[in-house]
Amino acid sequence: MMGLMLSPYVWLVVAAIAALIEMLSVSLITVWFVIGGVVAFFAGFFGAPIWVQLVVFLVVSLASLALFRPLILKYRKQGASHEATLVGKNAIVVEDIGESTRTGRVETPDHMTWTALSHDGTPIETGAQVRVIGQDSIKLIVERI
Image (cartoon, rainbow, N blue to C red; front, top):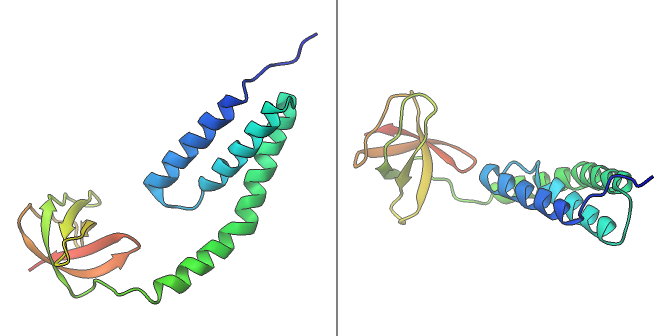
């Protein structure tokens, strides 16, 4: 009786999807599944049965998450303390900021564009001048001037 066969290239697809999700979210959660998917690919490529591939994927992904995420978060927080803040700077809305939690984009004087939210949830139209009153990671919290 033949066991369930799985192309090892499926793991590369899993890794690519996890990488795409990580790029969109920057949450440091799915990057570990990229590592697990790549290692599981090699296990499958060298003929490991599917149950071994699954175990390798899960063990490597979860071990990477448990071991490396705290270190990277600690390093990222240390680096963040040395970064200049944009709080207090003015910007121009280049993509409408919608109501509530719908984000738009603003351009700062250094010609960088940032994702932005209105501090009180009111919409702000393109072209409006705003002041940055807060920053949450890569999102700026702004108010109309």
